[in-house]
Length: 281
Figure (tube, rainbow, N blue to C red):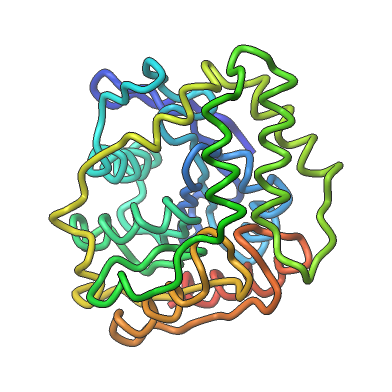
């Protein structure tokens, strides 16, 4: 395991790798407001032990990567998608399997269309469907909407408030099958807040624009695709996973019964096994 800063033009990104660089590469992209820490070290090691070179990185405005003024992201979703390719370039990786959680899965859909020659395959976890009929899919649950609406009253300068908000968020997003691991989530959130250049800027992901030229074109994706989705996802309901897998030619849907918008340890064998299967194609 080694952390490494890379520079792309005027942008600096924090990355970390696991395993043998000679092995097939898997690039992990986390979701909105979350740094690479939420691809936990044990998760990355277990995936690397399957015979892969695993890379994770902090998206812009998270962790130790470049930070912008709160409410003023100076980049688009296309820029974030291109960041992933820049990470591969820095590690001298020609092609990789891309695995993305939530917004990370959205970015991967852009990458698969924008840079198809760099994509060996893709795994889309808890990812939104943007194609025809998306407006008929179930919306996020009321409890999630109420939580995000309440964030406008949050004191972003108080670390304890930020910590409480982060833990409460993951609690609301959890499904019923697995007990909520508050100790684990609290420890991760504490590390996330402590190492961030400007933690409050992570909420800039809510203001990022772009992607219109690519989103909604999932039927054009040619890469081998695994869609992973929990049946109790309260923010991106399970119907999105089903619609996404139906829209991408040859895609497989891995259903996580009773799982929410999360990566619970009890599901790691299924998730890692699924990613490893597709990364080996």
